[in-house]
Image (cartoon, rainbow, N blue to C red; front, side, top):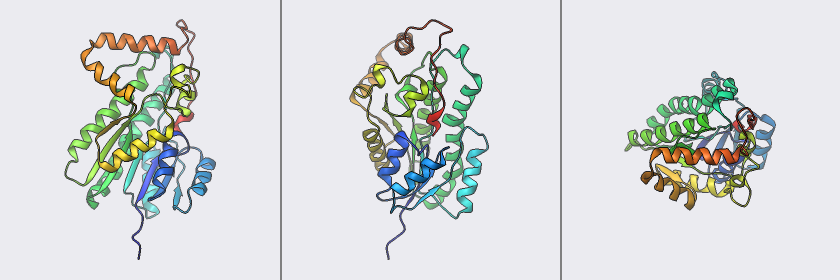
Length: 276
């Protein structure tokens, strides 16, 4: 009798990198798909058959959502083997002019929900003595980001938390991998208000499929950190030898270009669809 397939929970599974990870894992995993948009999740579940897909809609910007999601999965008698914390979104513009509520929702999704879901599911993974956690960090997490201050800060947290937890869990059978892409063709650019920029054009941004494939490969190897794209790896390496102030000013200059050279008060901002 064939052994049951491992079960993977993927947040933000309705689009972008999360959707591609779901497609890749569906070849040898059953899936729990979660995102805000239930119709899209139902369509994806049908697409990924014969993999068994369980759909649990959730808006991780709601502080009660991570615990509710965990309780619903537990009540359904499901026990995960893989946790993919993919959900997240960004925004472009000066913090002083930002919608503070949106900034707090960003922290809730990008940081708090990721941390809470990890904390809720980790005990069962440790009890099994096996399991994999894949967190979506970013190359943005390696330096401060003027005009995307909160987003860069949330990804710095994800990168640091993931690497530290990976070290703590050494020898437990549970691995933690942090996937750090650069600009990627996905809903993120539309939501953050940067889709019209060269960095996010189809010709220059990475496609979601290769990024997802790199993340899954690294997760399966138990790799602690994976930075996708040679240029991104080179830039992160070079930052070690450049004064911090120079790095911050360079990022600000890039964000000024992304904003189209707009003066203060003429902020370009996106919506919140990348929570998925």
